[in-house]
Amino acid sequence: MTSPETLKIPAALLPRDGRFGSGPSKVRAEQLSALVADGTTYMGTSHRQATVRNKVGEVRDGLAALFNLPDGYEVLLGNGGTTCFWDAATFHLVAEQSQHLTFGEFSSKFASCVKEAPHLKEPMIIKSEVGTHPLAVADDSVDLYALTQNETSTGVMMSIQRPSGAQGLVAVDATSAAGGLLVDPSQFDCYYFAPQKSFASDGGLWLALCSPAAIERIETLASSGRWTPAFLDLKIALDNSRLNQTYNTPALATIHMLASQVKWMNDNGGLEFSAGRSRTSAEILYTWAEASPFATPFVSNPTQRSNVVGTIDFSEDIDANLIAKILRANGVVDTDPYRKLGRNQLRVAMFPSVDSEDVASLCACINYIVGNI
Ligand SMILES: *Cc1c(COP(=O)(O)O)cnc(C)c1O
Image 1: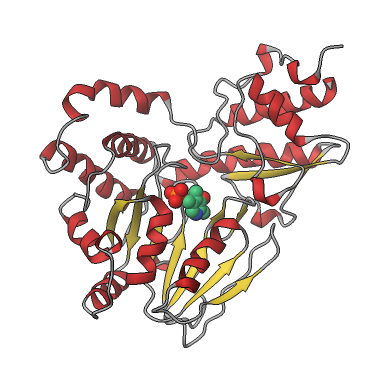
Image 2: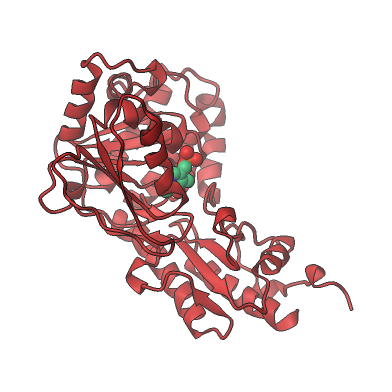
């Protein structure tokens, strides 16, 4: 008998597009052709001139429309991705003390940045078991609440609400949530993300939707005398963003693909449309797993199961890594679990670009593999 790894999945079962990675994630073919079409007039031109600046303006206006931002909210951007934004936030968003909800790899990372910042007080950390999320607790000494709308490492989502009675800013890591989950902008002051997930672009850029209170915080801290590296200076980012520029040179293709995706979402009905696509995919995945004799949704509370990143546990007699390997050999890629979680699990991205029929095909492929190894 041939080894299971060479198992060939019948073509009729395969998804049309086999990209299920949680970041970088599927880029739609239309985004790539739009980039090629503008190739010689856009790529390789100055980011200080109108062609690129108008594209940045398109992204900023498009995001303001997509998220229905109230008057006074502004869209900031800069280089370095979300990880860089955490460091910037330790200088220009946290005044003295922050509170962090930590329930996985990504939500813990921002807390660690704050912990190590010598100019800030010890952060208040509220933790819960992986596969669940904790709740924020209003506290008078907290000036920033750090929430994560979707914990990409575990597939847990949480709804974004200001903790009742809280005075501080609410900052939300929405790196994998933005565009794929609904959110009410009155419930946040800073909603930040990077474009390589629901926005189906490339990494290396951060974007932040900021309320007037967040802008005021940035301005106050920037004039407070706190030493700040220029690259992490949110006042410099604010000033550049208002001119549709970034402090240093951005990746132009990233901005172009991001603009295409935002336009696609807005043209088709906005956040209801894009979040609806993820919701439909998630229903398919979790319904399949709940009915399956060998698969179970990892997140036990159905309301916390993410619509954008699904985590599925497998029974002991089935090796999830082998399934991921066979899928990969058949062109269905990046369903591997988050490495540090260490579970017998597959992780499936269901960002708006992913077609729900492809999620259904993925489930059929897994059934076929399990039945044939
Ligand atoms: C991917 C991800 C990050 C890291 O984003 P980078 O742009 O790679 O720094 C942070 N937080 C969450 C929730 C993520 O999903």
